Amino acid sequence: MLPRLSRVEVDSGIVGRAIEKVEANGKWMLMHFSGGLILLTHMLMSGSWHIYRPGETWQRSAINMRILIETAAFVAVGFDVPVAEFHTAGSLARRPGYNELGPSLLAKEFDEAAVASRLRSQPETEIGAALLAQSLLAGIGNVYKSEVCFACRVNPFRRISTLTDEEIACLVSTARQFLLANVSERSGDGIVTYTGMRRTTGRANPNERLWVYGRRGEPCRRCGGAIESRKQGIEARTTFWCPACQPMETAAQRFSKAAGE
Image (cartoon, rainbow, N blue to C red; front, top):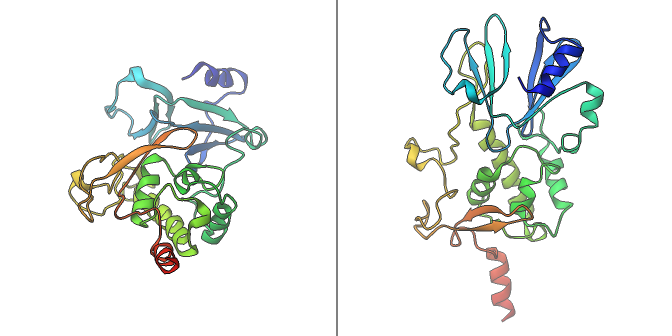
């Protein structure tokens, strides 16, 4: 276990506590222990949690293990977890980054209209950058950003002010649909599992699981045109899109220009 987490065992004790609940909030995971102790983790780009039966062989080396939680029925192993902290409800509410999260796309109760309103509050922001802003809506990563925009035929570099209500509604509902579709509850014994293979196309062939992400220069699965990519936003994350399927101007804008001419 990470040294800073081990300190909690010395000060207040972890062994013997019950795990009352495990939940996700955006890209953060919270493990609630009896006595009000909460383990907060974030995977960033490298971390992962694995669930095993006692005695089952791990799929990764113990060298990469950062957190180990054992019960009589299961063993939870955190590999290469870069952010791991113990909190109380009070300290969690003050935790920068976490306490600014917008609505989680995986929440059981999700208000699409409220999320659309949050997006509308940033009219000059490019929609691709806005979808990654966890303070607006929590849970979308760089892969889904590109995939959601493609699915809704929205150019990721359009400013939010240029989007129709129908386009924003499509982006929000599709983002939730994609994230929910990549979480499986069929693994048994109440375990909810992320398979590690993001899928958005619905195609059975694993080589065709994504529409545009990571496919620069390859043919679009819809129109056959070449997929393009470039950096976007302050963090310069790479965005992929099809210029033909996702034009910068909507059909209405093109019609308006033509009528004006």
